[in-house]
Length: 295
Image 1 (cartoon, rainbow, N blue to C red):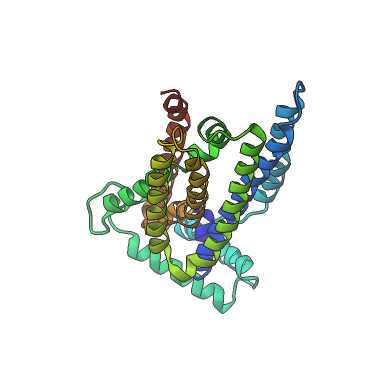
Image 2 (spheres, helix red, strand yellow):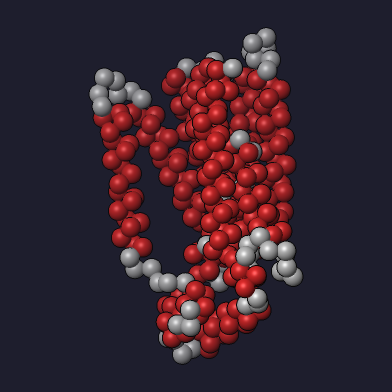
């Protein structure tokens, strides 16, 4: 939500998806580190190093956060207009008295005036003229759908899937997992390019359809692996297809969509609820999947 509120309208999609682009890059890096440490046997370095390595990025991010300005929209809402002008000036690389800052402040004020209705309008579940309940359901629903696409079953348990179900060795399974993450990283770059050209809705719909087709084909192919060994090789195509569609339309667009469709009065609450739904179903899938494998 912070990136969405701090970006120009014409750049907002790219700015939000760049976060996902680098996040997927981190997942790819972690996958290959895990592959390298797979060969470290009988030594606690194999699990201590990956945990400690994360601290490098945590320290960098924490240090940078200290220098981030507050959201200009939030400052205007709290009647801290001078601070908001300073923030907009920093974002526009100009002073607080420039025309660009004045236009930005005027846009924020008009947005607040349009959305500042009754107290009921602050309720994300209100059945009012701004259809708060409908927007909240859309924001939560699209995040639930993103997780229920099943992508994190592959992400979390790819080594197990490729070894136990497809019959590959531990080394080959980890190489395939790393290649999947690199491919997802590339496709996330495609999403950054497309988001402000194609729009949110088209990418969401195409990604959902692509994931549905991929998972349906995977279900059919993996069900006949015991009698048809070539099905294992064919199924790899659809694993890569799933990792094509998910980063293009279902990784971070649901978070951005939730922030963009919500009125300013309820944006914080709706964004928080949609993110909570995303992580709740992420947790659910992570916990249920091992039981599914055993049965």
